[in-house]
Amino acid sequence: MRAPVPTAKRTVYTDAMEIFHRAADLIGLDKRVRLELEEPDYEHIFYLTVKLKDRLVPLAPEKAKAFTDLAVTQVRDPGGLENLPNGQIILNGKALLGSDVNIRGGHLRLPSGGVFQLVPGESQRFKAYRVQHNQARGPYKGGIRYHKEVSLDLFKALAAEMTWKTAIAEIPFGGAKGGIQIDPRQYGREELQAVTLRFMYKLKGLVGPNIDIPAPDVNTNGEIMALMLRQFMDGERERHNLRGVVTGKDVRIGGSEGRTKATGQGVAYCIEDYFAEKGETLRGKTFTMQGFGNVGSNAADILAGMGARLLAVNDADGTIFNGDGIDVAALIAYVYENPKNLKKTVAGFPGAQKIEKNDLWDVKADMLVPAALGGEITGEIAERLKVKLVCEGANGPTTPEADRVLVKRGIDLIPDIIANSGGVTVSYYEWIQNKRMESWTEAEVNKKLEYAIKRNYRIIRDISRNTPRKTDMHDSRRYCIDKTTEPRAAAMILALRRIEAHYLLEGFSQ
Ligand code: NAD
Image 1 (spheres, rainbow, N blue to C red):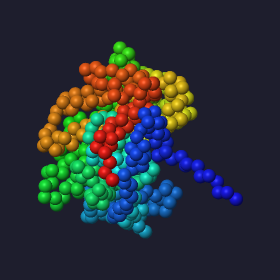
Image 2 (cartoon, protein in one colour; image 1 turned 180 degrees about the horizontal axis):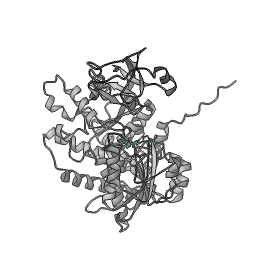
Image 3 (cartoon, protein in one colour; image 1 turned 90 degrees about the vertical axis):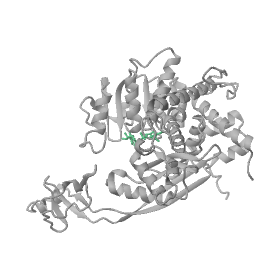
Image 4 (tube, rainbow, N blue to C red; image 1 turned 45 degrees about the horizontal axis):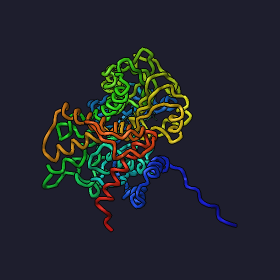
């Protein structure tokens, strides 16, 4: 019997690379360059072991009945108790020391009335990744994601995407991505710090300001970058020269003004340019959004400042809608400045009504800004959308099938590799400032970012429409391919042409 011919398995990576292959075919990409780019340079997988803290785990009401007569434990230092979104409480420092502890069978009752089981902290192992996709144009560059659903396949796709994005943004970096398989909501602040320090301890041999430069991504931020920086610099003689090992740092320790909101700012610049070309502004335009984290909340804030109205938002914990427009400043305060909102979710926001996640896609608006995770807009959802434009704040939110549906339905697309390139562009500004020991104003940063992102977006539009031209701002003549193509392929063509030039002009080392 003959063995069946193996069929290529579809994965997140093969899906993500579909557009690479399409664009490579369209431009007749050099064969060897294609092989160099088809797979990453390096795929690192390693493990971190970290000692967790003691914690209080809430008992289910049924089980708590057995402790109705248990006296309340009076905690002397309530500041030592850290509430997690899952209802557990981490015991930081010496939270119970000096308190009147009433414990029975490992259980205690807090003044809130709840009965908890005291679970001693044990060591736990986490799986960590760093994929370094390509460095033809400069050091590897890409974010660090903490999420329960990550995989080598996903990080390969995201690392490749960084290679295309840095080329499109015209910055001298390659592409990388990495992170840890962890649900950060299950852990306390000090536990996450320990995980981060251990992560950088193991990563140290692989990264550096001229080798590979991490940055924030989903569930990581400036605080995490500060810890990574400290772990990398500790004990080094010329530590002041190493500040550029991570970007997205707090401005007080070498971060760039404008970096925190740079990705959202870039999204807004793209959308502004999209309408400007039609002779329109954002005043009175409406939008819906998925994800209200760093990218989503900043994009929403800036778009609202330009006069647009946010009608609906979905995040990991809920979906809200207000046909008259959601007050974005109030929503940001509700999500980020309300200590009771442990999940940092839009759910429960009083200025809007609750709807089902599934209903988000049916809201009629001028545009949709996906700013959460990849693969969310499927072919079926794309068939339902009632928007004229999708601007991808997230990485890879639209599946290849959905892409085809958007083209068929005449819904315009601003692809992720240009739309969300603002973050990595300002990361590059941060890296230069660190190298030069300078600090630029937010106005300087935004002016440079606006010029860079609009200039490259215009080149992509010209490639897409096959309108080669040179203006004061951009020159698309080198990149157009004598035929029209959809924007995602056009963006990839720009990236591949810029990367290919490095291989063809510099040659290959054997
Ligand atoms: P974040 O962690 O700050 O926010 C993520 C948001 O997505 C949260 O509001 C969360 O509730 C929501 N979310 C998570 N899972 C969801 C689900 N299943 N359904 C609906 N919503 C869900 O992350 P971020 O930094 O804003 O990144 C968001 C996206 O933008 C990611 O795809 C990331 O790769 C991409 N991106 C981020 C940057 C950056 O500078 N932070 C740059 C480029 C691209």
